[in-house]
Amino acid sequence: MEEDRKPTMDDWIGSRGARSNGLAILVFILLAGLAAYMYFMMNSLPLTIGFGVLAVIIGFSMRIARQWERVVVLRLGKFMRLAGPGLFWIIPIVDEVPIWIDLRIRTTFFAAEKTLTRDNVPVNVDAVMFWTVVEPIKVALEVEEYQKAVFWAAQTTLRDVIGKTELSEMLTGREHLDEELKVMIDARTESWGVSVHSVEIRDVMIPLELQDAMSREAQADRERRARVILATAEVEIADKFSEAAKSYRKNPEAFSLRAMNILYEGIKQKTALVIVPSNMVESLNPGGILGYVSQMKRAEKYAESPDDEPFNPDLGGE
Image 1 (cartoon, rainbow, N blue to C red):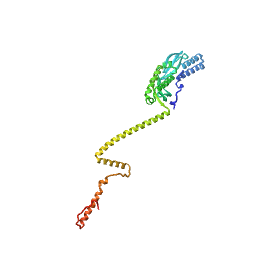
Image 2: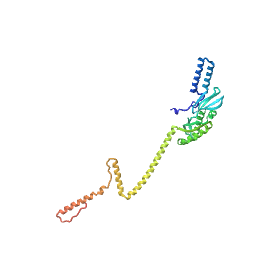
Image 3: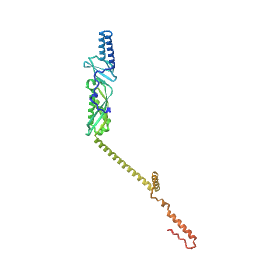
Image 4: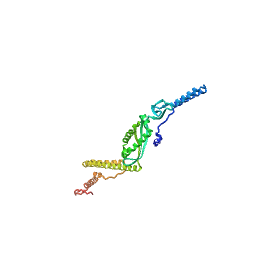
């Protein structure tokens, strides 16, 4: 992508020299045409020379600065005035406009490659700075190619901050580093007439080996916390089971109902045959019922028999 392209020195060279504009060219063409008309149609050499000289003077002296531009005007090499925005005039040969200054907020990308942090970790850091010119006269007269100066000041400041910061602080405290970079760069460029609005670190790249080590460390830390949470949950569950056991010890019916509920939930979720030990058969006592029925049959038989012997029930069955 274009924004990821590394800036070169040519990117920071400002617009220098005279700028042509459409209005000056149009006026020059009209006056030159009028001079030609005077020569060929009226055969007037003085008027032709006069309109020709006027065309050249206006063509070279008329300048137009955009709303966001300020132009440094030098007269015989000395600072004369700061022109713009809009239409302004200069004296050809005597005056010159070597520097056109843009007052809009500018964006500067800068980077620090293979810079050691405080804990000796090599990192590549990319950052972006937003700045603007607040004093065009200082920028033009006191700094040679101020765009380059701002770029190098930002890059060297970034290297200084990286050398004083540990890797963990750089990865987790970017907002603090951004503010620190802004203050330090602004302190350097304030005397140049440049104000720094903000500095933002875009990316911090570390070696792949260190990335793998940090990933393993983070994974081990997460696993440790997961085990601690699981152990804590087991302790809480055991406490709750202990309280439930005390309640069921005093109320066997509640324990039986709870067991039946667990069995019902298991059967309801999965359609299957479940065989569990139960005391339901003993509660019905089928053996006692069958013995009682057998004794009743023996009593009926004794009543129908002619024997006079007394009835002796056999509790052990027939």
